[in-house]
Image 1 (cartoon, rainbow, N blue to C red):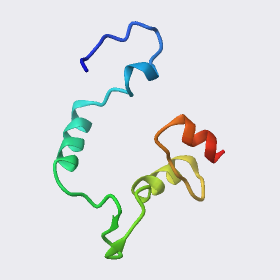
Image 2: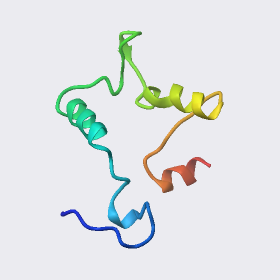
Image 3: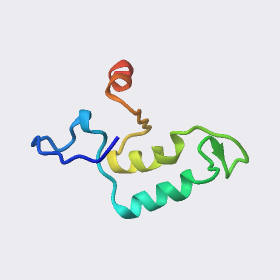
Length: 81
């Protein structure tokens, strides 16, 4: 794989990977992914957690929803709908 220039006019082109991340976010991803994380561990409860719980609160605050979930692709979103 190599970096390419997206000259398609489509900002988020699925054949060209995902949305580019800022340098600040890449640094944070590298920090978390470079070691162990609490992906499925609830630090407050001291036991198994849910991987979506890390952003559920944020999504609810942004959207005003009572509950929220994110999936990693369109096929999963269509199946849930």
